[in-house]
Length: 296
Image 1 (cartoon, helix red, strand yellow):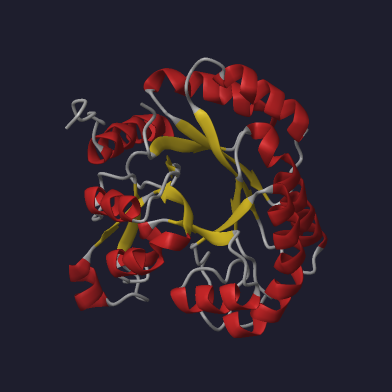
Image 2 (cartoon, rainbow, N blue to C red; image 1 turned 90 degrees about the vertical axis):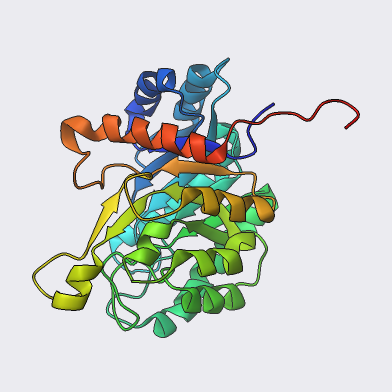
């Protein structure tokens, strides 16, 4: 049987994405999120054909497309990001997926509250476009260095913002691309949040964090000593068995795709070493499906 939750990774290599995926497939990745930054500068139809050829017969799938940047801004690259959202929504089905993820954006230098009306203006039409095509939208919960009062990239980093966003654009196709790391680095316990919001999670990034509580208590969180590090799953503080359990409780049938290139140790020449360690760890946390005997 196909796994109810696939374990994969993120791939954002532009025109060379299919080539990169071919290299990764023998290690057992079951899904891929294809990411773009700011501007989609790739022929998506051609890439979709290349990806389909690469995945044929492997059982692996494309979980989602990702478009990252600030779609609420007024700079030329922000307009390109908005166009990128449209292009990814239109192209998602060609990749065999129904989810497009990314930053919600924000009005630069303004508070979350002051960005909500602009969010409505941009994502109201994008939501209608997605709904018409059977596509869902998931917002990553990364603060990108912002706070509630000011920032440059993303308002979707806090549950209070999610409530405001989903009230502004009340559509079932809007949800979350969630990972525990970004909550932990805000010193938020991710598990109560997961239990409350699991029904709204469409895609999960497999990224963890290590919090040094001794540094928090002796040096604080704005001093010279880092108190939190992004980690591959299995190398941080999260209990992924519990995370998968909570996702299964609400019938989650998506993917956990490892968001690499952030671990402070397993990086550079050890990047894929860390990712394959995380892949095998998450598969173990998911467990191997064993069917019940017939009639029992």
